[in-house]
Image (cartoon, rainbow, N blue to C red):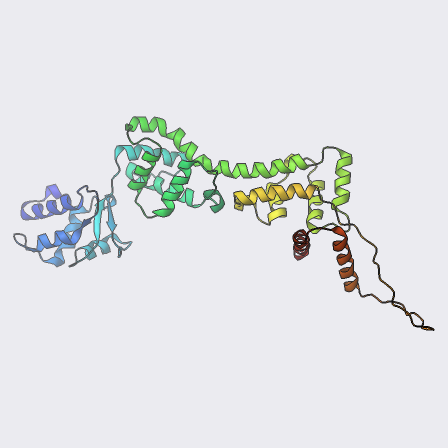
Length: 362
């Protein structure tokens, strides 16, 4: 039976429970307050019976209710029983969207392709749409969510979802209405205006990803040799026996991608920064561009003859052949080249660090 089909004192109690628990409020209602009312005169109902009576009263509206509290269980019936315990802090609230919230979240669900189940109510679908939006933003790369190039509205949405991830779907819908300037529009107006506004908001994430890829690819295509003689000269420099491992890897990409427009951006960011483009922040994208340009202008170090000063001989002493260890030979050669370069100490350190980086990649 439904509540209205009951009679007498039972109907009175069930009606009180139904109206109290499903009353629309700004905040959650502490169920233990209702307990104190029902165990006292004129009702005098044993506290052990309250959860059972409440279950009968709200059994057709369970999907409209949400529990609030620190010790909330996933099982509705467990929460109902615990809520009627003495001094319980568990609260309950009516989970119901306004017509404006429904209109907006319906468009969110459509845009994010949220699946709609058979016999699913508009309220249930709207709740799923809100979950889809949370997941969509959560799954964006951190480098994109932190990008300074995002629109201010997109930044605000990210900040809201990160600062209050447990806020309910109504709060999210209200925030979106205000963010998009739709709070004073009617439901039909929201249906007409929100699709383009939402698309612009959510497409902003893809725009950042595409912009990053464009900047790196543009640097590659601008630096790529325009003529065959230029290409041959560049490859000679990059593949020289004294060239760095990174320079030789660039030569491989140039030879592999005959058409520079077909290059995979992740191979370029991987060459320079050892990470895919999508994981690079704004600063790293700029560094990648600068280092890629510099690599196209790379010149291998010149090989200088190894000069070894012969020892002074004593009278009648026969000079013995000098045996130079390969490692010492290399160290001496490097020192002579560094000394002859006349570079500042800081630049010499950078060169040596780059050299170490090249060989740690093997």
